Image (tube, rainbow, N blue to C red; front, side):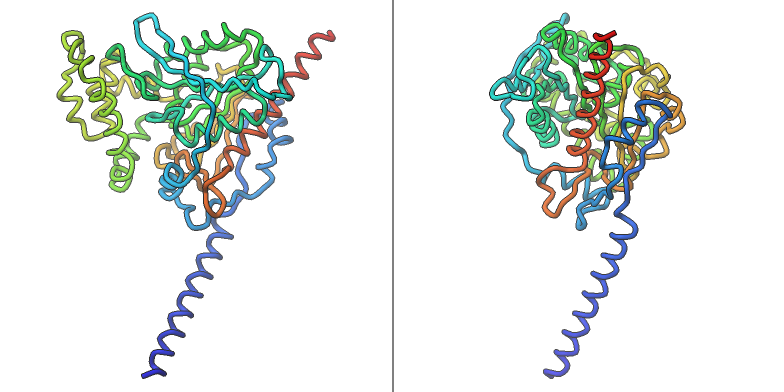
Length: 400
C-alpha cells in the first residue's frame, strides 16, 4: 500500500513538473516579446526609437496572469492605489452642468520645475466609467508628480462623485466639455506646456478632438487602449465571455450614473428625447447607447453615433500634435483588426506601440502586479523626451 502511494506521489510530481516546464517554455517563447513600434517616417519616429528604452527590452507580462482576461481583470483588483494629493475644482459649463477636475499642483519642494508658470501640466482623461480615483489614473498622476509636473484629471460629467446638474453625460465624440476644460487650464496657465494622457473612451474622445483642433502649447499625447472602431468594440464585447466579464458590468455602471441622479432626470422628464424607463432596462452597452447616448447627443440612430465616434475612419492625417498610442493585440475592447495601421503610418505625427499581451488597460507586469507597469515606464520615457525636444526647439527659436 505504501509503495502504491509512493508511485502516485511520484507520478503527481512528474506531472506537475512537466506541466510547469511546458508552461514556462510557452511563456518564454510565445509571450515574452519586444513591443512593436509602427509609425510614419520622420522626426517623431526617430525620437521614439532613440528615447523609448522599452522598445529595446522584452515586455514580461505577469507570468501567472498574461492572458487577455487576466490582464484586464487583475489590474483594477490587484494593482495598488497610491495616495495622490488632489485638489478639487468644480467648473460650471454654459448649460449649467458641473465638471470636477482634480489637480496635483506640485508646488511643494519641486526642484525640477519650481516656476509654476512654465511647469508642464499633464491632463488626464479616464476611461468610460473611470475617474481620478481609479488606480491607473493614480499611478500616472503620481508618476507625473515625481517627474515634477502638475496634473489635472478631467472627470466626465457625473463621474468622480459629482452630481449631475443637467440630463447630459458624455460620449466618445462630443468634445464640448473637453474644449471647455482645456480652455480653463490654458487660461490659468498660458505659458505651461500641456501633455495629454488619455485612456480607452478618453482616447477616442481626444483623437476625435485632435482631428479637428490644435492647442498651441500642447506638446504631445499618450493614449492607452483606445477603442478604434465603435462597432468592432461593441461586437467584441457581446461575445459570451466578454459580455459576462465586461459588458454587463459597464452597462450596470452607466445605469447607476442615471439612478444616482434620478430626481434630476425626472425633473426634466418632458425634455428628454428618450423614455427613461427603457434606458434603465438596457442590458448591454449597445442598448444603452441606442436608447440613451445617441439620443442625448442628437444622433438620428445608433449607427450614426457609432460612425461619428469611430476614430479609425477619421482623417487622421489632420492631426498635428504628436500622438503615441499603445494597444495590446489581445484587447477585448479594441480588436487589432480595427486599428488603421496604414493611416497611422501616413501621418508623421502619429505612432502606435503594439504588444502581444496586455488586455484592456492592463499591461501589468511583475510578480505581484501592484506597482509600476510598462505604461508608467513608457509615460516617463515618452513625456521626458518630448518635453526636452520641445524645450530645445523653443531655445533654438529664441536664438534665431
